[in-house]
Image (cartoon, rainbow, N blue to C red; front, side):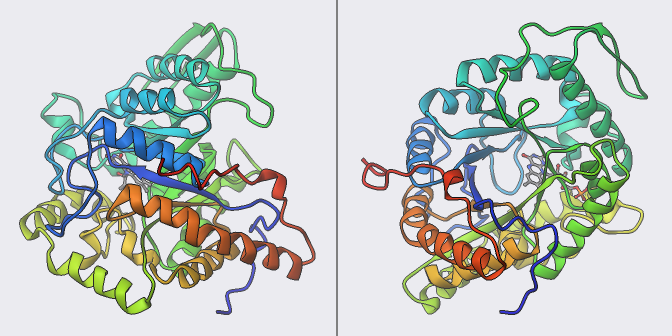
Amino acid sequence: MTTTVSPIADLEAPLKFAYWVPNVSGGLVVSTIEQRTSWDFDYNKKLARIAERSGFEYALTQTRYAASYGADKQHEATSFSLALLGATERLKVISAVHPGMWHPGVLAKFIITADHISGGRSAVNIVSGWLKDEFTKFGLPWLEHDARYDRTQEFIDILRGLWTETGFSYSGDYYDIDEFTLNPPPLDIPGRAHPEVFFGGNSTAAQFAAGKTADWYFSNGRSLEGFQENIAGVVKSAAAGRRAPNPPKFGLNGFVIARDTEAEATETLREIIAKAHRPAVEGFAEAVKEAGQSTRDGKGMWEDSTFEDMVQYNDGFRSKLIGTPEQIAERIIEFKKIGVNLMLTCYLHFQEEVEAFGRDVLPIVRELEADLARRNGTELNTDLLPSTDLEGALA
Ligand SMILES: Cc1cc2nc3c(=O)[nH]c(=O)nc-3n(C[C@H](O)[C@H](O)[C@H](O)COP(=O)(O)O)c2cc1C
C-alpha cells in the first residue's frame, strides 16, 4: 500500500470507532441471509454495552419513519438513543435528526436534557433526507435537493447559537429566533464547545454545508480515491466558512466482514449479495433518485451505486473492510492516512462481530497507528485511547 500521508491526517490522535445502531428491522444489509441481529431494544442494550467495552466510542442511531430498503419496522432515533445512553457509561450516542421534521429550538432543548442525563454523551447527526414519502405523506414540505442543505445550515447555526449564547436571535429564510435563552445550557465539558454535531451527506451541496457548519462530516462507504474527493470538497468550503480555519473531522462508513481467511470473508460477501432481497433493493434504488441523482452536477449519495453496492444501503461494501483482521486493519490505516478520524462500522451479526472487532482488529490497528506516527516523526497519544474490558464484553 502506498497512499501518502495527507497534511490533514491527524497521526497523534488514535482513530475513533463507531457502530450503526440496528434500530430498524432487517439488519444493515437488504438480504435474506441469516442475520443474528435484532432491532429490538433488549438486543441493542446488550450490543451497546458490548461495544463500549470493546473500544467503541460512538453509536449512531438512524432516523427512519417509513419502510424502505426492507426495514418495515423502525424505532424512533432520539428516544432510542436516550435509552441507550441510560444503559451505558462511556458510549456517546449520536442520534440522526432531519431538519424538516424538527424545529431547531425543540431539538436543542431535547439534546441539552439528554446531555445532562448522560453526563455529556449525547450528539446529533444532522441528515437532510432523501425519502420523499416520509415528508409528503406527513404533509410536510419537500424541498428540492440543494435547498435542503441551505435549511440544514441554518438549522445547525441555530443549534450552535442556542447552545452557546444567551438572548440568541436569528433571522433566516427558514427560521426566525427572537432573543431566546435555553436554561440550563449544555454541560460545560473541557474540549468541546457544545454537544457534537455530525453531518451525513455526499453531494457537492452536502460537502459545502458540512464544511461551513459541522463538527464532523460523515460519508457513505467510499473508495480511498472517492473519499479523498469528498474531503477536498469539505476542506475547501471550510476555509471560507464560519468555522474557518478548522475543517470538520471525517468519518467514513464501512461494512466489516472479518474472517480467519480472506476466502471466507469474500464468500460471506458473495452470499449476502446472492441472497439480496431484490424487490427491496430495487425499490430503494428508485427512492434514492431524490439524493445524488437529483443534484445539478449529478454528484452525491448513491449517484453511481450498483445493485450490489446497495445491498448495504449506505454503500458500506465500497470501503472494502472485508478480509482477515490484518487486512482490515491495514485498510483502515490507509483511510487514516488520507484524513479519516473515525470509522463508522456495520456488521452481519452485530453483537458477536462488534466484540470480535474489538478483540481481533483493534489491537492491530493500534499497533499500525503507533508505527505510522513514529515513521512520520511523531507519537500516537495513547492517553486518548478509550478504555476497554474485553473480558467483560460478552458477559
Ligand atoms: C453516515 C450517514 C448517515 C445517514 N443517516 C441517515 C438517516 O438516519 N436517515 C436519513 O433519512 N438519511 C440519512 N443519511 C442520508 C443523508 O441525509 C442524505 O439524504 C444523503 O446523504 C443523500 O444526499 P446527498 O446526495 O446530498 O449526499 C445519512 C447519510 C450518512 C452519510
